Structures are given as C-alpha cells and as structure tokens.
Image (cartoon, rainbow over all chains, first blue to last red; front, side, top):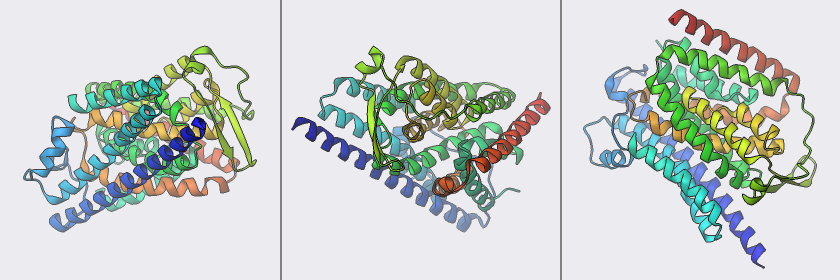
Length: 129
Length: 275
C-alpha cells in the first residue's frame, strides 16, 4: 500500500514540474515579445542597442525584483524584458523548491539534503552576485 | 546593423540546428554572434539566459512521460551548478581572448560522442555501494520496443566529477554542454541513452540558471540581444526536437561535422586575430 502511495506522489511531482516548466517558459516568451513590441513603439527601430539602459543593473536578485514593482524610472519595454528574465530564472528555482517539498513529504532525508544543497547554492549565488 | 527581427530569425534557425546536431543552440549562437560583431562576453551571458528557456521548454514533455530521472538529475545538479558558478565567475574576470580558445577546446570534445561507436545499451549488472546508497536507479517505458526498461546507475562519484567539468565549461562559455553530459552519463554512469539525453536536457536548465545568477548583474546582459535569442532559440529547439527522429543518422552526422568545423574555424580565427 505504501509503495502505491509513493508512486502516486511521484506521478504528481512529475506532472507538477512539467506544468511549472511550460507555464514559466511560455509566460517568459510572451513578456519578452511584449518588451520587443514596446521597444519598437517607443524608439521607432529594432536595432540591437549598446545603450546603458538596456543592460541589467542591480545588486541582489531578490531586492532587484522588489525594485521593479516600485517603478524605477525605466521604460516599459525594459521592464517587460526584465520581467521575462526574472520569470525564466524563477522557473528552475521553483522546480527545486517543489522537489524539496516532495522529498520532505516522502521522508527521504538524503534527497531532502541534496535538493536543499542545490537550493542553497543557487540562493547564495543569486544574493551575492 | 543587426536588428532584433534578424537575430530572432537567426535564433530560430540556430535553435533548430542545435537540436538536430545535439550541440545545442547556444554552442552555435555564441560563435555566430561573435562573427556578427557582438562582444564575446555579452554573447555568452545572453546565450546562457536562452538556455534556461530552450532546456525547460523541451524538458517538460519528457518529464511528464517519466523518461527523465529526477533523482539522478538532482544528484548531478549539485555538481553542475557548482561548476557553472565557478566557470561564469572566471569568464567575468579573464581577458576575452582566452574564451575563444576554451571554446575551440570544448568543441573538440564533442567529437568523442561523434566517434564513439553505438554499441547499444547493456544494463549494469552490479552497482557500487555509494550509487546504491543514493538510490540511483529507475525504470521507464520504451515506446519503440513497448517494454519496461529497468536500469541501475553506477560510478556516482566519478560521474559527479564529470558533471563538475561539464558545469564549469557550461558556465564559462554560455553553452549547455549537452553532448559532454550525455557522454559522461552513458559511459560512466551507465544510463540508457533515452534517459541520459532527457535527464541531461533537464539538468541543463538548472545549470544555466546558476550561470545566469553570476551574469545577471555583471553588466554583460544586454536585453535587446537576449530577448530575440530567447524567443527564437526556444521555438527552433522545439521544432528541431519534433523532426529529429525523421532524419537519417547519416545526414545528421554530416550536418554535425559541417557545423562543428565551421564553429571551430570561426572561433580559432577570432582568437588568433585578437592576440
């Protein structure tokens, strides 16, 4: 009985991960596309720019996300493109969190540790860089 | 002057070609962007972002079909992300000229997979203690043979070291290093080819995130370069995955050779002329 329960849980994890990946990628592509359209609308051209305003600047990924909500004097085109990158980056990140929760529910200590290690390294790198 | 529409169209084509040859779109995009006059470090940072999209987009269906082994992926990701963070940090520091030569060196390793004779998969008869302790085994349903295939993963320590190297190259060069990962997974970890290629694809997205975490605020991420690449490469990679099984291996091998030789020549030329 226990085994059936475990595999049930496993099916759900795989389906959930699959949906997270699809939703993350599709919404990110739509945000990027909207960003390109807005860029054309505001500047009248679609040339690859070397202007400083199209380079991502910031210090910490998580505070950077919060800053975007406070309307940091950037064009809406840049805002949409940045949002696309953020959603894309959060896609695998959410996938690790989900896996950690799944292994915790399965009471699989080894894999909880492995997953938390991955989560910790990613988080530290996102915070420090 | 390169514009976003042209780059988007090029990226669709490159994503398609990357998927067919197994090189991955980024390995082709980086040298191509350099050829078009984009600074190599900017090309690498933008390519790394596009990899998260191409990998996640194409991995979704394999995960749902239960071919991807999530446990093996989680274990190997410990090594690839550590490697990617170190590799990306090195790239932000070193002089660009070295990157051309590292790129050439890495492209040369893709010949290992190309020249290795496909002997067919024979499951491991035994499993070392550490791999068993980690519970690195699995099974999947093979649509081609209509059979349930059980397998045990072996040599987890050596495989981990291989993945650290793969991650290092990926983070440093803005590529997925898929061919290298698959070589390690099939030859050292003894994973069945289908599980190996889909699990490698799944791992690539996480490895790219680790690389992007370094590049994000390095001042190298150009949004107008990255946006069309992300859209184009993802569409191209998904389209490539759909037609892959309909093209004969012979043509794929010729295509692979032509592409790799062109990429090596281009990066070598750029490297030599930048000294």
